[in-house]
Length: 237
Image (cartoon, rainbow, N blue to C red; front, top):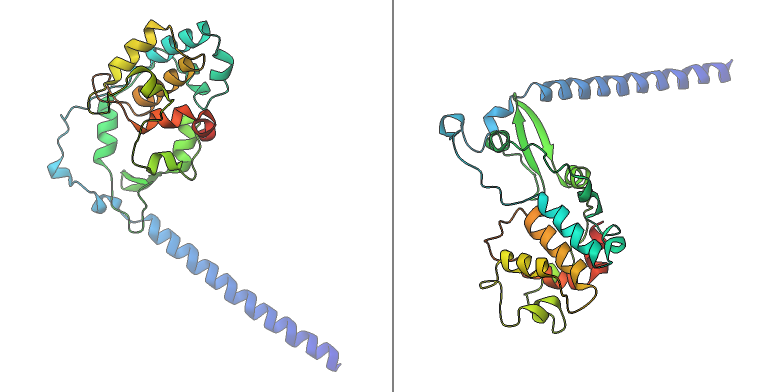
């Protein structure tokens, strides 16, 4: 009987503990419910009365350049390597895809401040509800991955002695060298090294398509050194 009574006592304590857990969970659900009722419009970085909905967005990328770049790389016998690169999925982009700068501008106007947000996150208020765009979302959209950045990116730029920058544009640093100059040289072909068509093509896609830089702007210098090391470049795949 004592054993039976002890069992009832243990069972009683277990039931009480379960009731506490249930209550705790219910409280958590209640808090979560309250959180869902927050109107995130109050956290807008730019208040609605200051919105300029007629502002223009300049878009410098050209998707059609991908097809041109792929065509030349194929002629140079480097298409297999290109299709093993981190940009292989970009060849599947429809050439006549629709883009609305108005929609993008409308989204960016709705950016909100969130405590604890990192520099790799963008929070937006849609109808007062919070939406997040971070590294994982970027990975899903682009097919690229994220992780520790190459030291090449964080190191002050000095052109590789035997790299494509020195090989084709010696003495021309970023302030002088425009993306259009690189693109026009790529179109001429007659590369000095068999791998240069691939390296220059990847460089152009990164600058003009992924970064969205117009051809009349200066190049992103450190990309030269990154693309010189194809293993480092493709670590983003």
